[in-house]
Each structure stands twice: as C-alpha cells, then as structure tokens.
Image 1: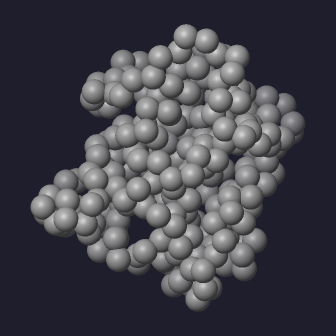
Image 2: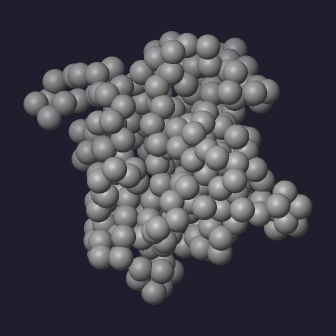
Length: 257
C-alpha cells in the first residue's frame, strides 16, 4: 500500500527536511511507502551532476525575482520548481515492489525511473496529451515536437528512494529562461496548459497521478488527510534542517537523473 499526502505549497527547505525524516523512518521500516504531492515556491535546484553554468542568470536577478537556488543530492542537472507545477516525492523501499508476475522483487534504479515515466505518460494521456520517452534521455516529452513536460531526478540510498518528478501543469514557462533545463539546449520545455491551450485543474492532475501510481506500481493508494495521520504512531522522531546535503548520507548511494 502507498500512502498519499498532499501538502499544498511548501518551500524547498521544508521539502528536503520532510524527505530526510521519511527516508529515515522508511529505512527503519517504521512507515510504509509514501507519496508526497506538492507545489514549491520558486526555486532552481542543481543535482549532483549539475553544471553551475547551466544557471544562466545572476544571483542578483534571481533574488530580485524571489527565486531560491539550492544544491541537492538527487541525480541530474539543473531544473526549476514553482507554482503550477506538480512535484511528487515517492519515499519507496525498492526491495518491496511488486513484479509483473505479482511477486515481490527488488526494483533496480533504471526500472524505477522507467515506472515513474510510465506514471507520467499515463497521466498526460488522461488529459489527451500524447507523451513519450526519448531514448538516451530521462523524463517525459510530448509526442511530435518533443518538448519536455516532466522532469525526473531521484536519489536512492539503501534501496529507499527520495526526490522524484516535476510535472508542468500550469507552470509559468518564463522561469525556464533562467536556466538551461537539465543541460539540454536542443529541446524546449512545455506544460499541460500550453499543450491544451487552457488552464488545467491541478487537483484533477493530482488524482490522475495517484491513480496511475496505483496501476504502475500495482498497489492500493491510501489517501491521508495530513502528515499527522502518517506520524501519529511515531514518537520521538526529531526534524532538522540538513546542513550540507552532499555530506549527509554516508552510505553507498545510487543516483539517477
């Protein structure tokens, strides 16, 4: 079973703090798999493989536009998160996933990313947007003009996942002019709104994503009212802001972008 918690709009630091807490609990088997769905206040994030020059705007201009800048421990290059974009953070134990035959198996990093892409492709299809993978790249792209509608960057530590995906629903695409998204100059970024020429209900997309997670990961989805519902049986688990995300995990880690 996957517990789903919708958080509304939160800043990136809070998102990192929550993920760190949930990953620790999942490693201890004190909670089951959790899917966080949320929006972020405007932020540019650089993954472990990011090149700083792919942020093409000065720190002063970012500050003027109230866009934060963070380095983080996910795989991948540079991307943007902000209002109108649905961000999903699956905190899953890959050792407890269901295979195609219905038995439990350990899901590898590549297969896990392919499943995330499948969730997003199916979600786009629910809104009559044909979407696809592109060989050699990670994420989800519109069919035909091959514009990127969803980015994926994950972190896997001792088989437990964090970070995840960002699906552009009604995202203001001007923000992507501040960066070279994922370090790719040859393909544009798009949104569901741009593809459909109309605003899209974020709540409808939230429910579509949840439903498709259930299908692709062959799991029941349990909607929780809030994080308190998840933590109500957990006592004495402190929350802290990570001082340096590049140093926080001492185990052998696997990354994908």
